[in-house]
Length: 382
Image (cartoon, rainbow, N blue to C red):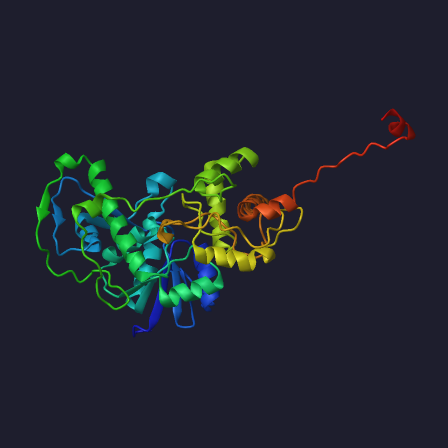
């Protein structure tokens, strides 16, 4: 593999890599990656490279810099050091995995960013990109659901709406930088306006060029926003409401709920759970409409709801800020007891949230009407 003929997919964890590799036909198992069908699939075991912001150094900013370059010039990138946190020598394990990622990177003509579908996933990938310092064409695989169809489409074509994704990413990077400045006593930060030298490590878009320019100061400080839709009907879960419900009904602690939900996501059973929105885009609603009857429920686990209600559809929200936790329609198999209990909790909420008023009335217990038997004396008394 001396020539750059690979398409390498980089994701967060091995469990996600397992699912992606199976979907695209990368069936050869190697140390730290999967290989096959022209693809390599590797993982970073979370945040492999850390980005550290130094408030005591000059802040480099130029009108010719887009948010990615702004991030590259004002953060320092290094392999994480978790030894003190986890209590054992994890740096050696991280170094081996990082060398695997770097070797595959240098043999690839395209790198697919399949990190988790939120801003932290994009920032982790950018940190890895600038740390390695090896320019290559980058494609974003945005995967709020890990079904085979979604994986193949996203790996080959990128986000659904490229312009919307770029706008969201630029705003999110700027917001992150502003947050870092504020968190590090921004009075001590000196801002240097300069035109940097040409940066060969800039992340290109699918055409191989950088897209977008630095928004003005107003655009940089306005958060893209997370909107939570409140209705009089049962809402879909977001992470915070799922944690609260699991604590009350299942006795799960926050870490257990979040970790189990991520496993269910990696097993293709639910959408990406780390979100605070609880409404869904039209495309997700349509997939629910087609697949909800085959989602593995029976009368004991949840009532059927026919055509799902549209009451929880997006009303101006951004797809890239996440959406409410929904099931994918795949039948759950090989689940542990904890995973099954949490999946059932999510499944019931999905059925209740999407149930139409007609369906709710249909499945509401009917009142029994008691009739008094008329006697022959009733007519005489009248």
